[in-house]
Length: 446
Image (tube, rainbow, N blue to C red; front, side, top):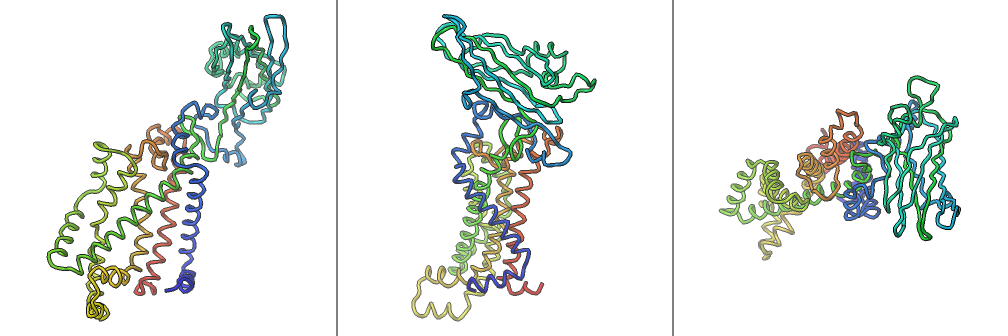
C-alpha cells in the first residue's frame, strides 16, 4: 500500500485524523522542548532550589485562572535595581556616609491578597555593613516601617514572616494588613498605587546596595507552581520528550525483537521453536511491575535502567504466540518454497520474506502499545521509583500525592499531568485502532 492509498483509506476514519493530530501536537511539543529546554538544562532548573525559584510563589494556581470572569487574583511582580538602575538615587550626606534611596512603585488592582512579600539585598563593603530603613506607603497615605537594620552581603527579609510588621499592622498577617482597606471590618484589598521606599546608608566609598522586591501572586506560570516554588510547566514541557521517548523506544525495542524471535523460532522449528515458546510462557506469568519495583528499590532508578528492563521483560510477550500463528501460515506459501529452491539462506528468508509479510500487522500494535509504556513510566514515578534527576509527568504526580495536593485544593497540580497522560494515550489509541482496521481487512467492515 503506497502513501496515497494509505492516506485515502485513513481519511475514512475521523478518529484516526483526530488521533494523528494529537500525536503531531505532542511530537511538536517534544521537539520544541528539546531545543528550548534540553534534558540537562531542565534537570538543573528543576533541582535548582531557591537559587533559581526564589522569585516564584509557593502553590500558586496557573495564571490563566485570571481569564475566568470571577477571578482577579494578584500576579507575581518583581522590581529590582539590578534590572532598573534608575530606581536608585544616590546622595552624599557627609564625608563618610552616603544615602542611596530606592523607590519601588507598583499598582495593585486585584481582588485578593498576595501570597508572600519579600525583599532581597546584596551589598559590597569592606568592614562596615550598610544600613537600610524600609517604609511601606499605601494609596491612602498611611506609612509603615517594615525593616530597620544593617544588612550583610546577601540578605533577605521575608516581610510576611516579620513579627514586628505584624504588630505594626494590627496583629494580622502582614500580607493582609499592608494591603487592607481600613474602612472595612472584613479584610478587603485597598486598590491603588503602593510604594516601597528603601533608605540605604553606606559608610565606605566603594560600598554598594542593590535591592529586589518580590510580591508573590496567587497565580503564576502557565501550569502553576508547587511546594518548592517550581514552575510545574517546566516539568510538563521537559517531560513530554521523555515520556514519548520512553514509550517509543520501549515499543520499538520490544515489538521488533518479539517479531524477529518469533520468525526465528518458526523458521528453524524443532527444539528452538519449543524453547522460544517455553520461555514465552514462563515470562507471561512473571509480574512485570513488581520486578521493576525490585530493580528500582535494590539496584537503580535510572530511566535508562528501567527502560532496558522493560524492553527485556516485554520481548517474550504474548505477541510471540500471535506472530507465530501468522508466520506458520506464511512459511507454507509457494514463494517461500521458491526462495529455498534457488538457494536463499535462512537469514535472507527470515528478514526478506517472512517478516515483511506480517510487518503491516505490527504497525497498529506498535502504535497502541506506546501509551502503555508511557503510563508505566508514570506509574513507576508515582510509586517513588522514577528517575531522581529528570523531571517527568510522573514525578509531578508523585510530588502532588506526597504533598496532599487534592486535599489542599491544588487540583491543577494533579489534573494537568494527568490530562497530558490521558490525552496522549487517547491520541495513540485512536490512531492505532484505525490502523488496525486499515491493515487488517477482516476488520474493515466492523
